[in-house]
Image (cartoon, helix red, strand yellow):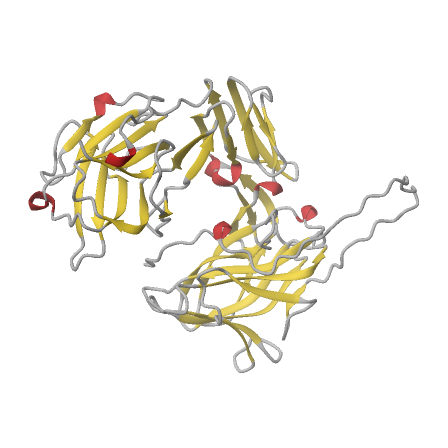
Length: 478
């Protein structure tokens, strides 16, 4: 099992972006004008890059992971070679990059990206696909890939080829060590094809489920966070599913006075009431739907009243906050939680969905020896029947990792090291709860208070917490 911190590629640094300027003209355009089209070359790598292809590694990737190998290849004189680093390699935590053309291509005449691949060992490439261009990534496609040690042909279907009339993102991948160890894989004969054997399109949103959730007036959400996929049946009989960007879908709101959806899947809540969001690709209706109930504006969390000199603030509009590396570590493969800092109706909040656990890592470890309590505001829109959260402070820099744990929600105590500080009966749906947690003696907790650098909130009973909001996280002294 892989155990590495997952890096969301949307947060990667952009390298070598190109900007295009357009010039307007006052003259009317003649009906006889023929607009220029882009080249439709299907080849990406055939013994070398085709058509001005450029290589751009992701932030944190092993920069030299990609080379052209003339010894090991499927066909011709060379293949693409990818060297995945070991865990702890100082030159990079994983291998990942995009391959992008300077001139866009018209890929609307093809139905799949195909290639031959093999590895030095069997392994699961975490993410692989096309449409990543360090720009809009408007038509991004992602899937995983199970490698074998022998050459095998792989097919990544295009969700709706009619959309790809000007695409620059020819190929991308991101892969980490397998069981802590690096390995090598090769890709050859990388090209777009019109196979004609890709059939039975079955688009889906929310994994085919019909979901109902509360949203607030003025908020915006992206359908990219709601499990957008397209599935085809291949000639082999295998069903191939890819994750598809929202722009492949046509979305529809049942009540545009409540919710409006843009062509890139951004849902804006514009009025009170209820609206059902459905979708289709190429005229084929997607399974699943999202119903949003909008009761009104987002409720503001209680404003803290303590003076700044009594507080070490992690996240609050009231105080000056200490530097933070991240409010969501995205730890794969165990974490399902998505989301992080958001602005809702002018209020900075931490907005998490599909919540199982989340970590906030501080840039500089804190000395909380003089602090007596930790305060946090939490709001859940829908309360599960068995609320049981575990709050942990950690000092990862100690010789032995030290921590304090407290339980939030359950009215009984299963672990004497984690006393309940806020019973489940005190939570109300859609209402902020202010939870004040005593910082207990080191003799009880083993917590080294001189260098706390990680705060984790965990849903330890795996109850169905769909959405959780967090605000006003700070240590304080009475």
